[in-house]
Image (tube, rainbow, N blue to C red; front, side):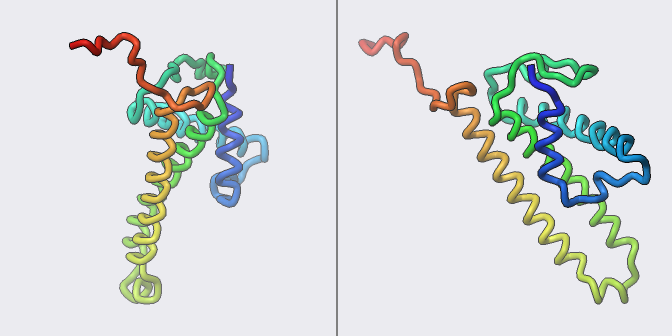
Length: 162
């Protein structure tokens, strides 16, 4: 069994500098509850993303969303992948803000601040995050999830006399 909380903690450590994610003008306990709810939504999307991008040797849908647990034990690599996919999903959401940002400012404001440059840097960073996640997923898929050893082909059933 693995707690969703284990993955939330990794994710929180990754985004600790983003004060907006943790500040809601509420008590610390309420803010943490909101952050966990947002993180749970990211985790659910990350599960779908991983399952859709590779063949997995485990059923990540074998979970209890109410108790917030995966029934099987996840290995550290799986927790890290989910954390990194959550970060990608989280990072993608700010792209919408950049598009809206362009509509909020006048021509004069835009001459002082180049939103296209900011958007370009943002997209470049997002593409790096996505590329790293794809590389990480391909590596995960090619290895035994428990031992980390590369998977090989089993030739024992092949008839080489044909």
